[in-house]
Length: 156
Ligand SMILES: Nc1ncnc2c1ncn2[C@@H]1O[C@H](COP(=O)(O)OP(=O)(O)OP(=O)(O)O)[C@@H](O)[C@H]1O
Ligand SMILES: [Mg+2]
Image (cartoon, rainbow, N blue to C red):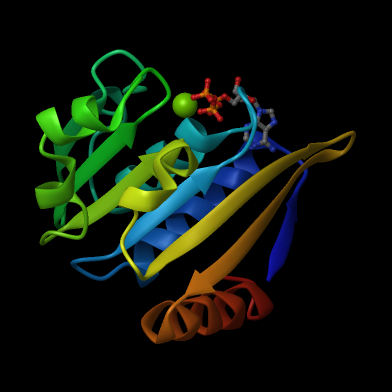
């Protein structure tokens, strides 16, 4: 499914909606160009799960931030990692898909290390704002996208 978000506020609304649908163990891979809005959406998801706004920052330099909300949220940004060894060093494979929610920016740089099932969230810049496309990989995420679509249709 895809949703047009004309403003940052609309992207944040989608983030809150995704937070309502999130289940422990979920992995969301956020992709899109530099400045597309991955961190913006991740922040809205975390806030939707009760994390204070000032706690959520871009993990560009820290690689991983952990927030405590309704569940633990691990927020990764793999942009600055240069090798799979670095990924192994941070314990990525133990964290991804562990209990709680994993939010992943630039996961496509290490496609071989992604779990078999995840929700792919692609953010594309268009002149009128952003188009956000949700693509489920796996049965669980197909159900999740259905739920999100229902909430969007209902105007929630
Ligand atoms: N509709 C929109 N949705 C999301 N962000 C928007 C939108 N319109 C404008 N913006 C702006 O775009 C920027 C998105 O920045 P953000 O840090 O979230 O990008 P990013 O994809 O995480 O980039 P990076 O790859 O550097 O991590 C913010 O400055 C935000 O205010
Ligand atoms: Mg970012």
